[in-house]
Image 1 (cartoon, rainbow, N blue to C red):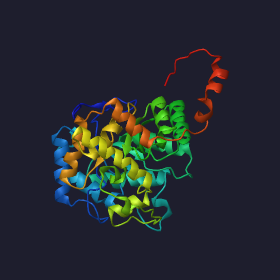
Image 2: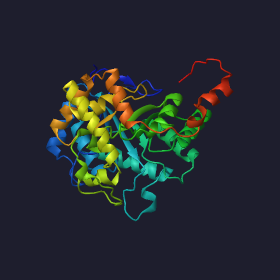
Image 3: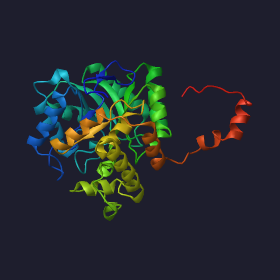
Image 4: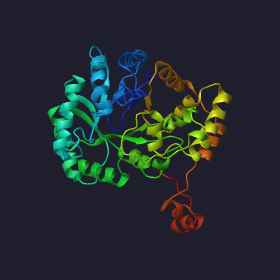
Length: 353
């Protein structure tokens, strides 16, 4: 059992953050399915009053409404809070430089976030997604310049290949620039492929892991059935939450099979499926703080209850089995008994992992 005011260190930094972060992509109804200002305020107050201090947003969430609402809510509590936001996503349709990872967009996005939040600094700025065009040294030097000016305090990264993050982290260390301290990735019982490379990379290089969508877009809450299975290829942001989840590829037969076992474990413990899914994510030692995203105060209360849930070894094993991944190369090859024999000659060697 833990609590929101039992803080964790964020990666290689000395920054103290709560074990659940409050995601605010649902703050504002501008995308058609979020919470209005009154309900958003109730969710914010519940989280902060319980001791939570780690709040996540982005310059483009609900077309800027998320940051504006958060700026209003946090005005009297600013120094108690760690505010994380993100740049990368385009903010002006038709303007090719209003998105991407380059210095110009980074600078403009930070200035817009500062205005929308009504603050003088961003405590943690994430690169929101790799654009596969900007050079790593441009990104890391530009982030370091923002740290040196005090506009941001720490840097993080989301949705980027492990090799690319490792390259940039090494570059920062070699040149004395500000390193990444946080890695935000999709991680849940439905999406475990980050366990192959991203999570081990984060542990080795000093990045705290912040899972987004730990409920698999709500699929693990038990709210969907096989009648809802669909895979949308729409490029635009759907006006329904179900449409967004379908666009993410999470409404699948496999996902619903996993959700069924989550529901069984929840019944055994007397918890909700959402709490089980969050508790499973929290149990990974590499995880600093999953993001809880809520559209109602009831959902927020439910998510916070995950902090008091304990899973037995048998229950964890069942959840692991139903969601297990097939190994990939080179682990698939190197972990075979024959190859281990060839590498170590039969000697038993302790792993550093």
